[in-house]
Image (cartoon, rainbow, N blue to C red):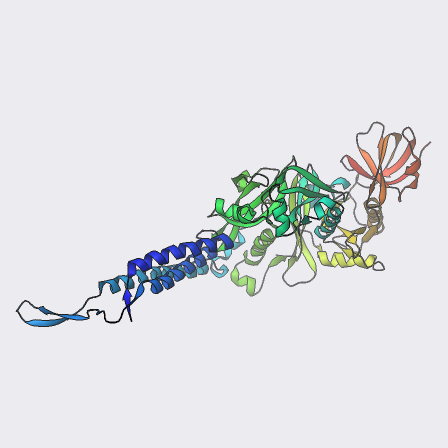
Length: 565
């Protein structure tokens, strides 16, 4: 038996099989076909290697023994002499030529990748990296106004996750078929800080039983009242990460936008409560593979699957997260490391800073801003300032406020209640009476919020705790006064006297809170019954004297309530 070359047949068979394998690879791994995506080069390289292997296999066929393949022959030259000539196998040359093309492409691709990586190295492009995020120096007390208690998030993501899981467990029709996804998104919904999360099918069999109707609800966790709402939908969510085939949200996006690179796909709701997927679209701005930045976002209707791409400047205002916290922190770290040059980032390290290990979110002007501390690379457990970045627009502000690093403040708060063994959440940065203040919730082992703590940023030994936010703030203001720390005028507790025009109550996390509106006012004072037991027997028309905050907002904290003559 001998081998016979059949290059045309081999090329056809190799191409068909490669196309099939390439589709399967693309279907499951979903690489973006983009010059800035290293996975695209790997994808094409694998296809070329597969094609060459298949071509080498299928371009030969077995030939029966006895059939002769001419190797040479007799011929007559120009002088009439008989000469022996070697047989020229043109099909063999064609086969070799066919193999050279994909191998040449592989070599070119490898060269492009190497050059692209080298061209984007910080050692050559330190200035470009440092310019990815430009933070404007700003004044903390001017920018960060005191906010009402109705806008201060009391929960972190772990506590919100526990509350969502427990709420779903109360609903027998849903808990048997669905489960809460592991992760929530903090957004501003109707001017309130909330976390939203979606449901996943319990398993493949439960998907089969519910796929025609989709996922019937999502969950909203109010980060102030800690109330959890299961929002039922008239038409179910049909596109999500727990779907299969082309209704899987990542696959749906990839086949609609094969060239776009996505860094994050998060769940949000618009102001009307409609569910959406917000997919962040990125590019690489330095070399071919360095300097990641956002160029836009794709918004996908979670029910219908309809999608629209927006440039980053045109993203609708109800969207709260386009830039991820991790990307923003990385970009600032580039600035902190390289704004004085690459060599300085290694030797000398003059004015080299980095973000701290954690972050949190602050709601400002109906947007969500990422907050993190900025510290020296020497790791001295103190901050040189704070960074606030808008997650929709990337507007960035830096506040040069030296003080305790967040984890030091967390340890200080935990030490104040060490007898309970509570754990502090990563702090929020608030303006309390003109003082930059860390605010933390203190949780027990089951992730339930039990107390609150406030720690002065610049003097972190000033720690106040309380079972309610109003009590915590009152204790904190007293500590500021005792330690002769400046308190902005007009924002401490003031005395108000008047007749009750309206009084209401609500139970939150096992505590009864009263809402009191005095005649002539449009706002309500809020106070826990544990801080003012008298509230339980007050009625409309009673005359009272209370001490409360004079800050703006529909809800304002009260510290004490007593009857007035």
